[in-house]
Image (cartoon, rainbow, N blue to C red):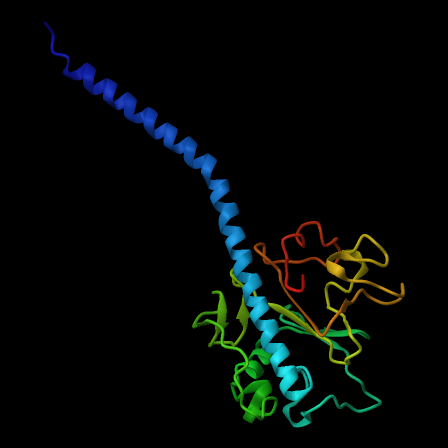
Length: 245
């Protein structure tokens, strides 16, 4: 009788290849589910981050009777809602990576100025505690050393979401109860001329959409981008994480 060792070895190798193929197929089927689950977890973390930041801003407002404005020079700081009658402030959006201004809102590229005030760091916008004279720490987020991780970077003092993007914060600095965000105020993001996405509304076609509240917080989401010419429910805007809902 001929030895059967080679036949058995060949059969074992075939079995192994079949098992490997099955594992590869199962892995391919599971990967989308794993990706979706991970994204949901990251969105949940972002919402908690934004909620905690909202609490910090509210506590600051209760302490000083004004919102933490990083835009004014430190020497212009006054407690209470005071501004020159001929030069009232507009709302401000912080953290979009762009600087700009129009009649309703101005944009500051980085959110670090706001963070320095809330974490009570005496530099930059809060030089010598100018914007936080009581020296209270309103916000204590997780700290990081890099500039791409989630949390507050001690390198540039920007506060970032789970995907490494700076959080976007808009403040109603003229205190009219209408918060105009640099992105979401634009009619291109909304399909209805008066009732927009996420509870935003518009009273006048010559004005932008606004949120009824003191501030808005959001994230550009997993794709790290936004487009002011596209509706809020389409790419790249539809994965943005909204903090005021």
